[in-house]
Amino acid sequence: MKNAVHAAALAALACISLTPAVPALAGPAEYVFPATVEEGEKEVEFKAGTRKLRDGTRESETILGFGLGVNRWWFTELSAKWHKEPGERFGFDAWEWENRFQLTETGRYPVDVGFLLEIERPRDRSEGYEVRWGPLFQADLGTSVAANLNLLVEKHYRADNAARAELGYQWQLRYRWRPEFEFGAQGFGEFGPWDHWASTSDQSHRWGPAVFGRLKVGQARTIKWNAGVLFGLTDASPRNQLRLQAEYEF
Image (cartoon, helix red, strand yellow):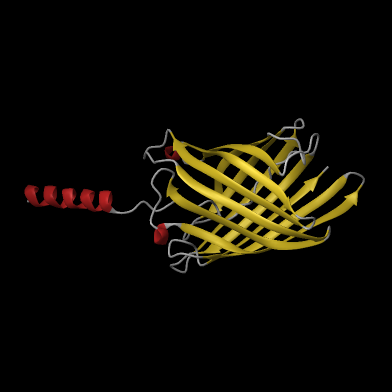
């Protein structure tokens, strides 16, 4: 009996070691980080998202934060996150501290460059600390289209289960039709471990149309918003996803 149990355990470990690592998905309320910073700007930000997974279940997330443009090159924001896994109740999930650094003067070069450092402390202490970092790129394509591309590495530190750093991306195209309403597209994805990508079918890619807007609500006060409908492009991606971001700037 002991020999049988021992053999079964070894077989299970072998299967685990041979199973391709599936990239960890960013939350349903994911959003595209801008590369530029506005000095002195204060904002209250609301983000929400929900997505239907391949097995038909649904995952949802809500984030509420306060941010400040400390100076012309540093923006910082502290947020609280609530999350709902399939079959579970909505509940507090983590604290998140976002820091964006603008590395080039706005408009001086063809591409504005920034850098993200984000630290998350999950409620579940066994997950350790989640750190995400990487370059942010932003450019104008002609006079009417704004483009963003971000390459981000994510890794858990001091977690019970060690995991390798993973590489992900964000992109966005926005057509400047009028300030109150603009349209374009967004995409998010994860390749797997940064130095050994997962197979294409095991990667997650979510792309789709998006809309944007900006409304003046008083002297030096603005509401900015954007929303997207994303569709999974691989078997490891959600079937579909709806995301929303709204900022009250003052």
